[in-house]
Image (cartoon, rainbow, N blue to C red; front, side, top):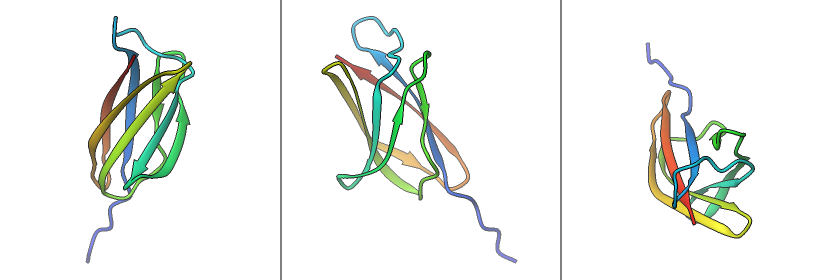
Length: 89
């Protein structure tokens, strides 16, 4: 019998590049080959959790009041939650 694993997720944190403090209310886009597959907003602690994602590599872009940051190559595996940090400046 084959076990089917559920899709994965990305749980991340958006912080200011200058001091590492959390960025609340930032928009976070998860992209797959340039296509936005999820859009989230950070909470008061600068954290977000994506929707369920297929296994693969993703780009995460964050933005707040014109400050931007991105991280490429975030690997998502089936049945797992991947952590990521995005620094904005």
